[in-house]
Length: 553
Image (tube, rainbow, N blue to C red; front, top):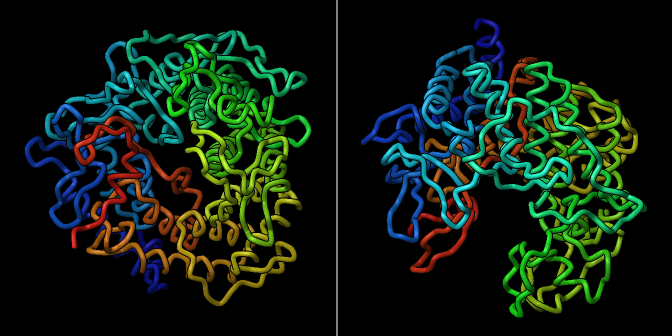
């Protein structure tokens, strides 16, 4: 405690940041609990003026105050990090009580799956688990990356049971590796889930032909399964679990374009199970591969969902690499590291436009789709939509920093140097020769962490100074009314907000306690389901609709 206090008292900026973070935590603890049914559970967010919890408006007319434990994993990381940097265990105790209560009350009695994720949550008004009929009340994790190591400290057996159940519920056929983003809550657990035989289901020599599966092998769903398997192996010593995690990742690698090495979004194509409708706006996966339907006549065999690199690139370039690198930081594997690094380098070599600092929309065979106008409606946009390059956000630096920190690959350092220069942040000729900018307007929590970790690795005061400027920008833009929010005009605070955790990452590094803090990995959780929106039933993401709401004028 004395060491932490001394370190903090030497830096007024850090004290200011810490005061803001404490205010944020205290406000959430004060206003985030149910007043009618007091428990350690917290709402995912609340109105910054009225303090009313975020509610889900179901199409049948009822409302539910949302508490989704999967959307609060960055909140747990923040509380634990705050205890580390201050020496005050009160914050971790709050996390302990919250986690223990959830795992004692919201585990499915048959499967062992938690009532959380993309389609399930707890209604704080009733303390009952709720979900979406439109999503068949299924289990889903996509880049949630729960804090399993900590949860195992709270309830080891329940956590281990969950991971086994997670895999068992999401894999329908172990021979074909038919798996998907949705898992069945009623599926009985299997303690031998990681003892199934492994065989590759992707044959690179037959590219672009891929297995056809009922499940959707999206990389964002697969990443969570891989992350969970490796965590299970680390917690138990079960080598089969690690082998299955690596085997699943290998299928995504085998599905990459064999000539360009560019990544694949999935390692299978959706199996057509119903006749294709005349209406191209009906894009459900049971009609078959959506990219083939929309682009096949013009682009031929490359037109597969797996090969699309002109949708959201964060899952392939940020979320998956961050999860894999966190695994490799704790459980080194040279082959897996090569898979991560080669995927990143191959993509940026083809898709990164240095002059404009943008990413080109592409097929993973290298075909540039910039300026292409869609000829028909479909999964990837409405007819006449034009595909444009999209700006490279500073968030994309974090996986590259972590990959370079673990490998010291000179190509990665060169790429980092180019990107830092294009963002007017720094000029690096080698790890020991760094010139940083005097000012910057950038304010990204992932950028703050990237600069902090790069500064640690290079032992660079210049980069630490630059990181502090980004941190000050974050506080100035996002700290309002004693809370970290998107802006002063935004209506709701969100527990999984990354800014407090990013600031604590910097503070921990300056205290030389960075290794004791939970690692920033993901932007956080979400809810996705049917919602009554302005008299219409729509399927929405809470992060795209609820948390973008502005305060009334």
